[in-house]
Length: 256
Ligand code: G3H
Image 1 (cartoon, rainbow, N blue to C red):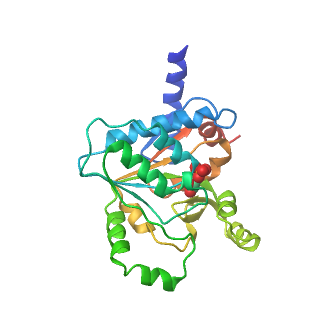
Image 2 (cartoon, rainbow, N blue to C red):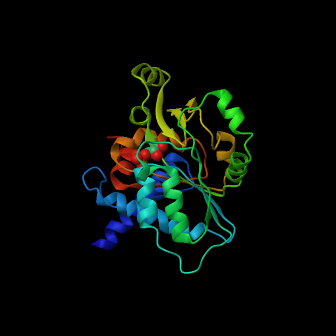
């Protein structure tokens, strides 16, 4: 019985990969909508996959959010220290709750890997002037250079409306985003259905050009309400690897 379920999931993974036209899909069984433990399973699957990609000198970039927090929670401690590996946040401090902030997750993962890390504590919204002067600071420059070196990026996908609310945007700003067709959010950018940028959060961190050069780009997202957001993010790059749950996979495939 279990074998048939697994076989079914493997078929779904290939189907979803072809529909989204991306590199790889990993689906964990059941629905994250009704069972919060499914997020834990997504975390396990993602951490195992990420671990298989790490090489001696990897630079790993993380975003924040509850899903990536589960990935790091499920990560197993390495027996040997990875002294040439570095973990960094992909962007400045996004999000209010400290336990889900990229900086916190970076420290937790570095602790499990026994590797180096750098944090980036900047507010969510910075004026262009502040960005320009901050970029002249040696400590900020150093982290920007590291961001350009990321070879494994692990990021969450959000719905545009929910992320805009979570980030404390005003009602008018939210409305304007929605009017521009924003359906998804990832690493500080809002995208429309076609995967085109409609808005960028003005803070320091990864830019879209850098994102497209990263060798391993891994998105972890689940719950059927994220179907449209996941489909939008899948348009960004054909090398995307997606780890999701069965409910959202089926929603994208069967469009119900
Ligand atoms: O950018 C998108 C967010 O990281 C998604 O957050 O995992 O808490 O839904 P979440």
